[in-house]
Length: 147
Length: 147
DNA sequence: TCGATTCGTTGGCGCAACCAACGTTGGTTT
DNA sequence: AAACCAACGTTGGTTGCGCCAACGAATCGA
Image (cartoon, rainbow over all chains, first blue to last red; front, side, top):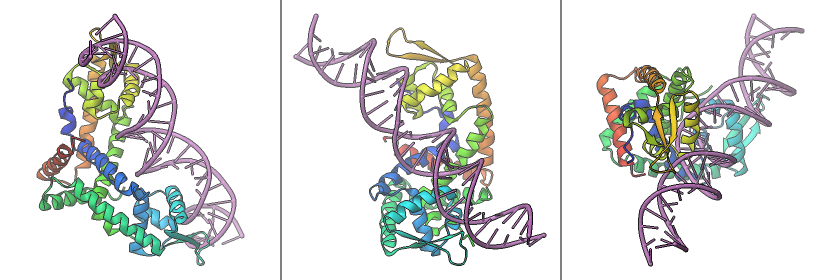
């Protein structure tokens, strides 16, 4: 009565990608949602943890998040004291965004949640298959990196 | 000044997936946008072409599109005479959706556009790598198929 | 010095994926 | 036959993510 997915879709890489990505996003949303966070929050906290304090524009660029979206997410993070926003003395256009201790703790919780998500997502794949998938996706991403 | 993407992101499969999928979606949107269509339109037309006339509910189920979204997209397809909606004589709850000749022609155009998209998307991958990627993604999708 | 560029911010858009509710119709149960 | 529940099409939302346009303020470059 309800036949399966059309074969032309199942054979289309772009469709496979968006479908698995949609499923992955659901898992991520569930995992981070339990911590009252979304993907954007994690990305920004991770960037701050790795690169240290940065301006909002730099944060947005390295995370692939639009400047305007960075503002909103940073507002939420600052409201929870996970991040501090202070004017840059050397350039009054900028804000310097700093990760707080609470932010570092929350980031760790998010990372743990995301680790569990990866496990669920990649469950049917062997270790070598997981590595291969990562390699292939990275190749694609790097190749198209220049926009 | 603007350091690269945080390493923890680049090592996270769910992030790689959503990023490449986002890029693929952009390509698809560009390709189909030239034909004034979106992904949803192609999915429904493809399903109709493969399985023949069907009810809206069945269409939605086999394409992974919500019933309510099917309504809207079908409205647009019907407005362009790519599809015909007629009441099912055997079950007055249902509509029978039929692909028109114009719909078949338009589907072909979309498929061609999408073929070019796949080419662009997978450009940096060898044939065996493309097959491997398809295999891995299919495995993931099938494993999580039962929602 | 003056024009171009950058920064933060506001406000908006589009797509994909969902969810809740409603009236209508169909099947099941009793 | 009546009562119930499930399925159908439809309307009208919401969310996350990715964008774009415009603005005043500040900085940089020619």
